[in-house]
Image 1 (cartoon, rainbow, N blue to C red):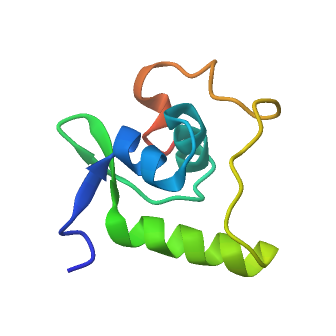
Image 2 (cartoon, rainbow, N blue to C red):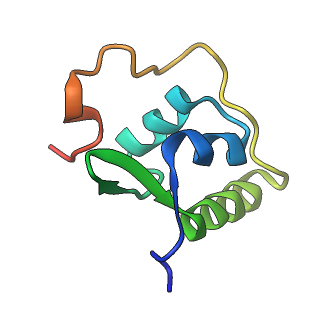
Length: 85
């Protein structure tokens, strides 16, 4: 089942070779789907595979690690980052 294997946001970020902060930014931009489990964001393994596939199709190669500049999530307040408005 698609939602059967969940990884915490930190583990999902490790698997994508990006920082947890960058992953949460992707969640906020709704580029990666997630579920909340006991107030903690989790990403299904299938979503990671989909994200990698989409990124490699759009760039012709494996996804690159986001740069340190640009959009950040440093100003988020509590759960507003995880929950849709």
